[in-house]
Amino acid sequence: MNLLHKTGLLAALALSCGVACGGGSDSPADASPPDAKPVVCKMLPSYPGANIPASINAERSAPAGGTEVVRIGVGFNNEQDGFELQLYAGSGVFASGIKTGTFPLTGAELNYKTCGVCVLAFGDAMGPSPPNPPAEEYFATAGTVEITEVGPTGAGNLKATLKGIKFEHVTINQTTAESTPVNDGCKTEFTSDMVINSPIVAAPMMKRGASPPWMHIRK
Image (tube, rainbow, N blue to C red; front, side, top):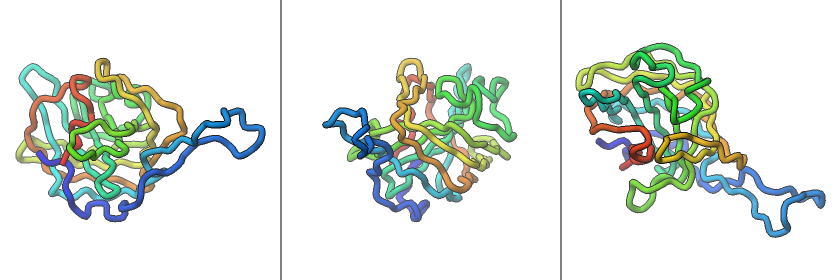
């Protein structure tokens, strides 16, 4: 399954990375050590949304006796950065199963360990031989995900619109899957809607915490 296609999906995002989004003040009152370096964030402060082409598939993992997972990932910023939507049955708003509806990103949806609707982003995600750990992981802090279709594998689509999505830099524990804010001032957002209408294909089993989330953003 090829989640990150070399397409013109987000040509508008072909911008340079390496944006400072923090750092000390030039004021003499700055309490930072004299040799402190400004924080350099690996994602831009914002990205425009986009309509994800139907040529980019969503994946469903639904093993017998296991957890159903539906996911889709895309690359942007010259394919240097990545974004992924993951839906987990049995968690958060999907405690009784993945379903259609409008889901604000609040409560359990704000941590990778507990979310049913999980919205992630990755800075410098595409190394020379992916899958590689990204330089930075980001998790949603606000927004709404509207899901209008989660069709059958091989015969249906994942249709969703992500509105007002904001992210902050986090670390994700690969044992517990808990996401923890880094609090370094690195944040990003989609300034317009991200619209998904993609065929759903079968995928190998994915277990949250058993493999890094960026493993599912790949060329």
